[in-house]
Image: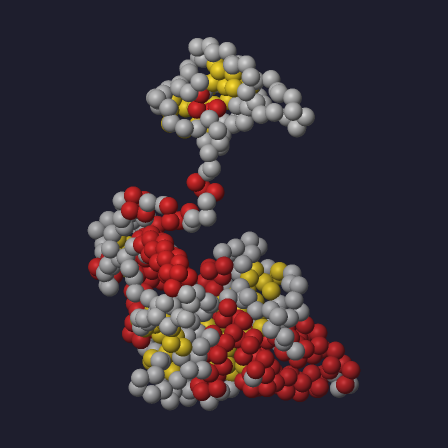
Length: 502
């Protein structure tokens, strides 16, 4: 074999023989070292997946087809061709190994900027916020609205702070329901033992004894509790738009009894007891070598999990478990329970519902489960952007027909208030709430919703009286039966909205 000719920068290395036994031409290869000159590079030479370090002042590199495109520290992007390190034999990439990517992250380095402790005040004054005379949440010193990003680049901490404030807001609304609205807090289940998980609802003094009318309010899903429509509106807008207080006060002024449901209070949280996991090597009959191998894998897995937990939960928050409340473990169960134990037992001849979002679904489920009772007692239902679905909930034909006559859904829409909105479901009429924001639909449709309930009450109670009185008057003018029916029909069509006959 002939020796390769040696130059200052290149060496010719022999190639392996081919299958026929003939030798191939030598392939030029660069000497090790760092060569900064521009040279012609063969495109048929394999390129490694990542370059080795060299003495040049390089930060990073990418390697397309034999070229090394580098960015020098403190200089603009440049191009180096024929870099010696790009001609080394391919090295296996560490990221191709089976080790977990998360285990190779230096979490201590990643979390040098640890978040502050999750220790927040338990009063509005501690947060330095208060509600002004307009019901708006404002900073005590600056008068500014609530600021979510209290600390930059700490979204999780800011979110925990927001949730802590939300819990204070919930207690504040409970106090308003009892003090400003004069509602009573009633624990449920009514026969709960002392140590049993409990929930509660609010009701007025005459809720069960008012012989004429009763108003029932149901909020949607999520973090909201009794007396709230949307926590976001309470914090960022005002109490009127985010709470049920305007509905409650207006209903009580009109002589209604009031019941406020609490469908999201389905469980209580307690600290999860620590459980000791017995090692598999203690009671296993496997060979010692296999047990040692499994224990080693288990220890590595636990180490990675602990590292991940340190990143995910640096505050080491307590693990909680949920204890569900008997017969109130879901919004649907809650609505049925309150109906059976309170609403159905009330003396009111006319019951009216105002239900928002998921509260509408809970009412439809109540309607399906207690159809006959609901039909005999409920006069009207005002829904605000309800998420019910009569097909998915398998509502029968009689339920859908009753909803068409006695329900109306104010949905989020950019159309003006009370504008008819087309519906693909054969249940109840849909009209615009005057806003395209879901959480605002209850507040924006407030005047129309109450007018609808009053209108339905007037129809239920006064329509027979109007018929009997004016039938006698029409009979004296138009003695024939056809004339009486024609005039009654015409009068009803022209004036049915306000029931102003003649």
